[in-house]
Length: 145
Image 1 (cartoon, rainbow, N blue to C red):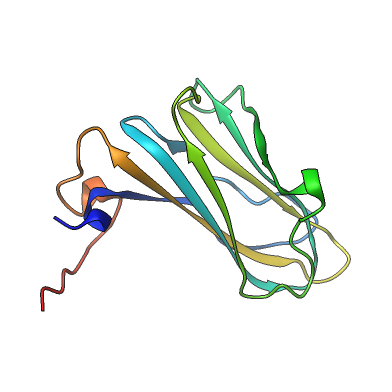
Image 2 (cartoon, rainbow, N blue to C red; image 1 turned 60 degrees about the vertical axis):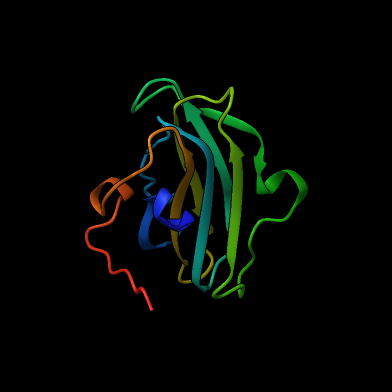
């Protein structure tokens, strides 16, 4: 089994255009994994993001608090208008973290908004995923040669 087949892929933000609002985040359950990478993918950026950070909770659906050092606004590096097609990443060691993670991404309202999506990649599994569904995929193809 290849290393990429031992990971789980979870949609963290479904692709959408956000205009003067916060993107609808999808809760990521990290149970059974030691490491999390979230890739935030930007499309057409007519507006800058006004927030891009990670939050966490011990309880599904509520009680989210900010993850220390996981906020792009803390050092003024939020994605700006015109950063079309760029990727931004979060890398999180899940030891001593809460079980559930969410991305908070919001865009300004001066233009036509910002196209955004996010993919969570869970790795270092305690029990290795064995098929497409357990890897978070609808279907998969493996090319051997």
